Image 1 (cartoon, rainbow, N blue to C red):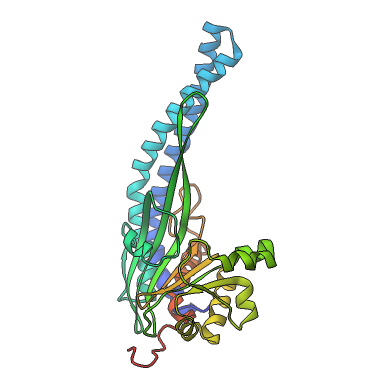
Image 2: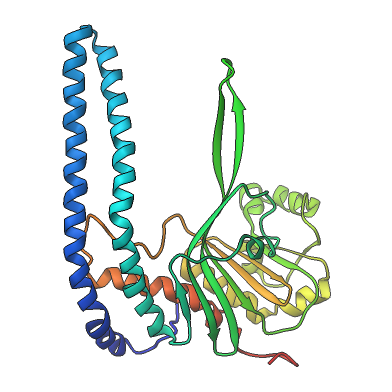
Amino acid sequence: MSTVPEDDGDFDAFYAANILPVLTTLEVDRKRIAGKLTMGFLAVLALCGVAFVVAMAYTRETSLSLMIAFAVGFVLLLIMGWISRATTRTYVSTFKHQVIAAIVRYFDDSLRYSPEGRISMGDFSASNLFRQGIDRYSGEDYIEGTVGQTAIRVSEVHAQYKTTSTDSKGRTQTQWHTIFKGLYFIGDFNKHFSGTTLVLPDFAERLFGRLGKVFQGMNVGRSGDLLKLEDPEFEKQFVVYGDDQVESRYILTPSLMRRIVDFKTQTGHILHLSFRHNNVYVAISAARDMFEPRIFRTILNRELIDGYLADMTMAVGIVEELNLNTRIWTKT
């Protein structure tokens, strides 16, 4: 994938001057925190063992003693989890404000980065990409600004819905399900349009073949019509719905379709795209949190920083990958 900054030598110098000194200081904090967490975990194991021995002395029943030991361990792990979050909060915040913020500055000094910020739920829903109602919504690592002529907003997002069920004993259980987790991008598109065009992963055809095409045509729960486009590789990867076929074809030029396919191939992630409200919305699925620091492995590792650099390239580089700075007609 092409990057926003082109000169690796420049980044080497930037890394040595602006990032490595911070990492060296933070490595001391990381080792201290990792040591405390390790000792805490070992203490939990020891206390579970003590609980088992004491329970055996009183009950003489192995299964009951194990249950007591597990219960003690569970409570202690909950307490330890709360303590670990409090312990690591300052470290994570410092890492993001100094290291990730520096990487953002390297891409473009005008970009604003907020570790605690996020794309709003309203802006997430505005794309019409995901139909499921949202019951819990969170996000972080918000970046905002202008790349060339394109205004962008991007952050990590995790949207969920819940289901409840009741077992035979009348106990209610709640389960949380992910609607989307990953990087969410909103950019000013380079053409004027008034309708909605959705570009979605073509799971149906890949799973069911020709029958999948039938499911697509039924368009259950989707507004707009199913569009058939002329790029065979694009058709294998995506399914397109639009409420104006002429406008959708005006948006999805052969060049843009090729760029979308290439971007998916290069990132290796599932993509959803929406063209709506004169914006392009890009949802890039990712199971991991992209800009989190390590706790139990050294951060004095250039490959780690190169990984953050690649994540930033994916986030901000969408402008270049989709050629959004090429302004069409009256769009300036």
